[in-house]
Length: 254
Length: 263
Ligand SMILES: Nc1ncnc2c1ncn2[C@@H]1O[C@H](COP(=O)(O)OP(=O)(O)OP(=O)(O)O)[C@@H](O)[C@H]1O
Ligand SMILES: [Mg+2]
Image (cartoon, rainbow over all chains, first blue to last red; front, side, top):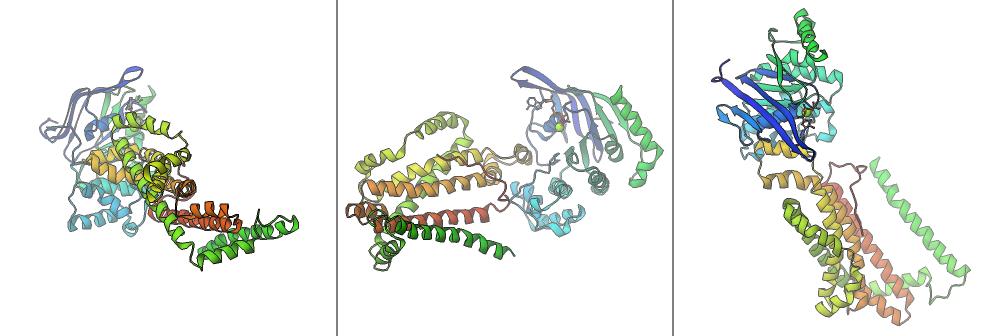
């Protein structure tokens, strides 16, 4: 893939945190490109710098070295064309589901009837049509995370970043959400960067899986996932799926 | 169901008070406590009647309540503004916070005579006294509250491109609401205390003044009557704040206790 048509392009990006015990190399240097409409999963051991990587792409943290470019423009500060979903749902407890989804629009001063309708449509897409008036404390963990996903999509971002969005969920809900997110992705065709600890989750959803080394995280392997789309429950039963998961798992055990 | 529960919750403390009044009534009979030390409940009731229906107490009640409300508003608004400023400007926090905490160790009641000299016998000195006493609990709780936001929410808002002003109003203030009300709750009780102290020291109006005057006349029943009125005002005021608290901060369950820093 050439850099020209890359949506997101990271080149030799590295981060060194200054801490009270001296400098701490948290990430890289590492390079990766994400194409338009591509789903990239980033897999890595705990503490290897995955969340740090995400902070760079959102513009919350400047890289200590290298460059991060989105749509041909260097990322120097937060940008409005990126959507984020965190590990925790991070909703506003004092706003109902509908207003939580609309919050980015309100903050950016772009509220309109069209956006209002879109929020309704997104809630329907994530299966929460009947819960628009509910408050976060009245929802289950999985429902909250769905609200967060709808919120991440409301301003029609070019790139959706997700930092272990399902980590706080139980195994059953997690699997269900994975399948749902997969469907949402196939419908909306966004570029997605998903950070995860789960190998099957990465293989199931992504077009490519990048595996990071322990801290400071560098890319030690990129796996292209050839599984046919649309993917569903059957996909997980394919021998190709299991074989890919196995291959990736070996990277961690050795 | 809920209303029945509420009714019982309302009736139980009333029953407790009724029992205490009974103990009071029979206690002074049994132990033959003279009425000039502890008046019987009947005498207090009679004094209340004299003052409330006769009307002599109303101007004093108005004066006291006015002082409470104005002092409370002045003290709490200053506290809210200052803690907001401090939470946003780090330099200010380091410069001002320790000084305010140090000032807090001054017993403000001891300032009452000075305040009377400076601000006169009337509303002025009372408002200043009350404002001084109300300030600190509201200030400390708000300051803690404005720091108790979820840092991920701030990251999220910054990533959305929110301005500092938007983050303050949309995230920090609502996150602090529970703490702010905890401060307002403590301050409202202290406002009562401050008013009465100022009125006891020197004043021409107010329930504290009536208590002082009745003391000179050995009218113990009237002193008790004033205490009963003050207690009623205190209970009503703090119930009102609690009600507003529950309405405004509806998303925090009552079991999730908010930090309360008194003094
Ligand atoms: N603000 C910071 N200041 C100093 N060190 C930090 C900071 N944030 C993260 N680190 C350190 O950088 C390293 C990478 O952190 P990061 O949160 O990116 O890891 P991660 O891969 O997301 O881990 P996990 O999978 O557990 O979420 C860790 O060793 C962490 O201690
Ligand atoms: Mg992380």
